Length: 401
Image 1: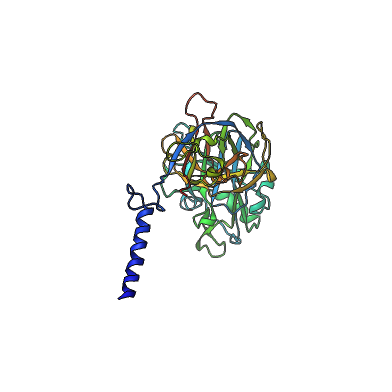
Image 2: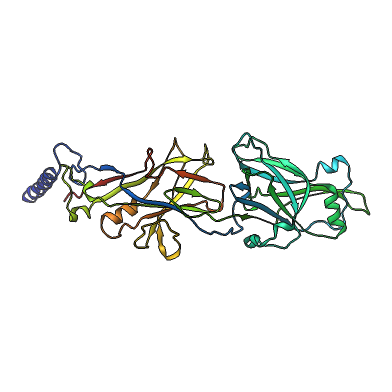
C-alpha cells in the first residue's frame, strides 16, 4: 500500500511540473513555452553587381545547345562511327526521304517572329567531347539545305528529321570514310534550340538506306551518335556595376550584400534582443526575394536552380571579379518555377551563421546550376531601382530559456 502511495505521489508531482511549465493559453506547449516564430522584411542593401566566369563544356551534358544569345554562339557537333563499307545510296526519292539526322528538340526560342533555322555542316576534324572547343569551326562545309524547326515543341520534346543529301553520303563511301562528324548551327541571330544528348538515350541519330554494289540488296542503318557536344564562342560576361544578371551562356553571377541591422531581432514583447540572446536565435527561414526585369527563358514549365555561395574576400566595396579563394562553400540550391515576376533564393544557413556570430557578413554570390547547359537568362531589378526593390525576409524564433 505504501509503495502504491509513493508511485501515486511521483506521478502527481510529474503532472504538476508539466502543468506548471505549460502556458495556460498554450495548453499543447511548444518546448513548454508560448514562444512563436517572428519575421521581418529588410531592404538595407548597400552593394550589388554582376560578374562573369569561364566554364568549359564537359562533354557529358544531357542537353545540346545550338544557336545565338546576344554575341555568344553555340554550335552542336556530332560524330558517328562504323559506317558501312562500300555502300551506294540510289538517288531516288524513296532513298532520299529515308536519309536524315534525327534530333530530339526539347526547347527553342519563343519568338514568333523568328523561326529557328538550322544548317548542317561537314566537319573534317578529330575531336573529343571534353575538347570540342578546340575545333576550328571556320573549316566546316555546309551540307544540303537549311531546316526550319517547328514553332511548337511538345512538353516531352519534338523529334525532327533533318535531311542529308544522298550525294554527300555517297562521296563519303567513295572516299572510304568509316565515320562522319557533323556540325549544326542556327542560321539567324537571336534564335536557338536545345536538344537531348546521347546520354539521355534520345540523342542524335543517323539513318539511311543503302545498297551493296555486288548484291543490290536494300539495307538500312540507324545509329545513335557515338559522341556529341557543343562549342560556345563569344565574349565572356563582363563586370556590371548596379546590375543583377544571371546568364547561363557565358556565365554571369550576382553579388549581393546588405548592412547588418541587429535591432530587427526582437523578443515576444517587442524588445530588441541583446547580443547574447540574438546569437541564440534560431533562423527558421531566410530568403532573398528578387523581382524579374527580363525573363526571356524561364517561362511556364521551365525550372530554375540558383545556388548561394559564401564570400570569403574582405572589403568588397566596388564591382569586381570573384573567383577561387574569394568564394567559400555553397548551400543547397533553390529550385522552382517563376511565379509572377518574383523569385526567391533560400539563404537560411547563411543568415544563421551571420546571426550567431560564427560567420561575418561579407556578402553572397548567387550562381545558376545550369551554367553552360542552357540558354537561360534573367535580369533582376537592382536595389537602386525606383520600384520592385529586392527584400530580405527572415523568420526566426527567440530562445525560450
